[in-house]
Amino acid sequence: MRSEAAYFYIENRKALVKQELCHSALFSPLWLLSSFSDNSRPRRRATVNHPNIIFILADDLGYGDVGCFGQERIKTPNLDKMASEGMKFTSCYAGSTVCAPSRCTLMTGLHTGHSRIRGNSKNAGLQASDITVAEILKKAGYRTALIGKWGLGEEGSPGLPNKKGFDESFGYLNQTHAHDYYTDYLIKDGQRMTIEGNLHNGRKVYSHDLFAKAALEFLDKNQGNRFFLYLAFTIPHMKMEVPSDEPYAKENWPQSQKNKAAMITRMDRDIGRVFDKLKELGLDKNTIVFFSSDNGPHHEGVDPTFFKASGPFRGIKRDLYEGGIREPTMVRWPGKIKAGAESDFAWAFWDFLPTACELINVHPPQEARWFFDPPHPARPKPAAA
Ligand SMILES: [Ca+2]
Image 1: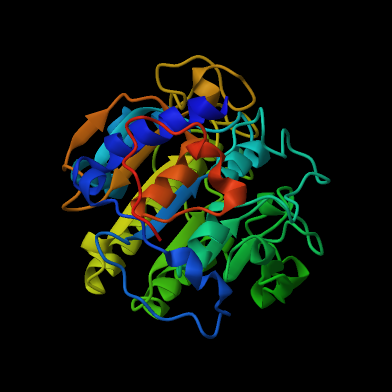
Image 2: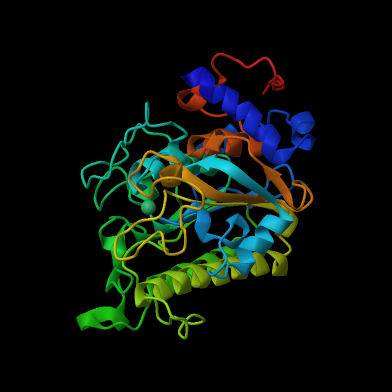
């Protein structure tokens, strides 16, 4: 199946980045930088040939939950704008029907026939031998951050994000912990960080708001660096909690549906803030932004048929039908991806790692070179190192 992955790698790249990079893809010996320590890594600003990469992942957001994918009642103006400024993918598939295995494919570039994590289990986590896209980008000189939900390694395990290529991490490690939007602690760089306002059953701090703030701070702090930001929001996963159900408070809907809609609109608002920040910092044209969801909509405290969350498709989260794995996906890169484009090219989460490598012309380490074997005839030969 690895040759199949190589095929997707080539074709997907063409779908995403058009012709420019196909002709400019010279081998860049950035792997030589792998011997640098964190402190000695040079600051290098992103360019069109070494763009910043942001992957925004929603949690249990259905294909039909987004305006530009057919949703009529939940407001998602910023995602709709992202689609109008980039490419909408109507046949992108999550790696699995549930969180952990889906996210594992996104990070490792391996589908679930090869990947380590095949289901949601506390004992399932990445090991030292697993290679993630963050490790590859970090070795190529990128500053890397996970903000939000990880789900691929518990405290004290080899699968911690900071051991798997992320310079910084902040959020939930454990998926059950991630159900709690008013948690009294989060994990920052492997250590518990108390959320004072939520101690003693307080409900003053909504974790999503912290993630949005941390993402903007990361962008500010790394405007002079090439960076990879994996922004894994937990919205609209259970519980159906949100600080305010506006702008839907007056709707004649069940409260859980008002909350779900408000959660999605809140996330959309913060995605808009990310784009505003990129423009403010002058990073807009040197940053490629992906958006997708890790699996189909759930029915845990909310009826997914109310908003037709699966769109026209059969099934929801945990179902290996289109509704369980087909995701509302967009990619935006001004000047490289034609505004308002739409593609029905079929690709999946395991295509992200090789696409990221190709985007920055990085020669992967030997351990991650399976997608070059056998070589695809369409692939341009890299120049000698
Ligand atoms: Ca999920």
